[in-house]
Image (cartoon, rainbow, N blue to C red; front, side, top):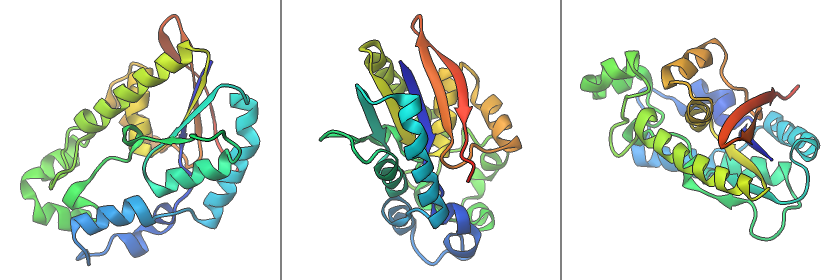
Length: 225
């Protein structure tokens, strides 16, 4: 049975981040910025169409029986799932923080200049070792916080796949990077090097199969929109 990892459809932040969300100086606190990111940021019209495209292709990829669907706790992932899979049984999809975006703490929506000026001791890691950089003010690093959460979700998915269920995960770019590292047994720097050449598109689907207790990447489906 497959595991499908899906990046949420295009959000207003993806489409217009440098004209609205990142201002210098930032006009709100880190806590307020994170609340905006989690609860307010929804889909663009293009994102809505991408989610409708997912509704067309997912039945072919995932089937319709024994479908276990999970989303992050962020609105843009929840909305993508609601449009893509509108007829799930009661109780699905299930929200889990294991699939959440990387928590950037007090640095949420800071420009790089403001971030480096506010936290100069963190600047070198942010520039050169982004995967180990830990966001200030209660944030997390990709290499520890996000990767740890991704490992928990991968274990959950593996257990459910052994029960002959298809698992679908609606998540975010950073969580998808962590999941790729685990499922494809690559290092984070290797995955990030690929991401620099071409970031995983919004609404893209990563296909995995569980074979002999190990995950195998079997394909990628990207939206035409």
